[in-house]
Image (tube, rainbow, N blue to C red):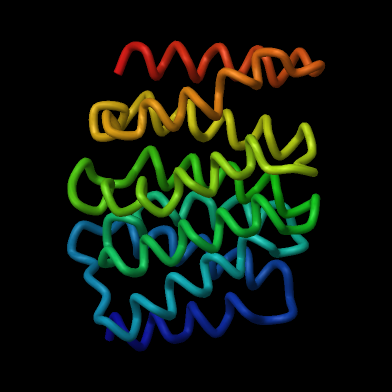
Length: 200
C-alpha cells in the first residue's frame, strides 16, 4: 500500500499543476518523516532524482518544500545517493543558473547539517570540499558564488572540522588570499571560515 501511495505522490510531483505539485511534495515530506519509512533501492533513486528536480521548480513554494524533503531524505537513502545529490548540488551552485543558485546553496547547507557524522560525512567532505574551494578560488567565479561557497564551507568546518585535519593546510591556502579581496562580504565570510578552521 505504501508503495502505491508513493507512486501516486511521485506522479503528482511531476504534474503540470503547481498546486498538485505542492500538495504532492508536502505528502512526500510527511512520508519521509515517518519513522518506519524505508525506501527500497529503486525508490531511493527515484526519490533522490525527483527531490533534486523539485529544487528547480518554477514555483518557489514547491522548491522550498523540496529543500525540507532533503533533511529526512539524507537519512533514509544510502551513501551513494547522498553523494550523488551533493555532487549535483555543487554543480548547480558553481555552474547553474542564477535563480537556481540560492536554492542549491540552501539545499547543500541542509545536507551538511543533516548528514550523519559517519563514513557518509567523510565521503561527502571528500567530494564537496574541492568543489567549494574551486568556487572560492577559481578564476572568473562571481562574488555571489564565492560568498555562497564560503558560507557552506563555514558550516562544513563548524560541523566536521575534526574530520578534516589533513585538509587544514589546503583550506588555509585557499582562504588566506581571500582576506585581500576588494569585496567586504568575501573578507567577512573568509574570517568566519578561518575562525571555524582554527576552532576545529
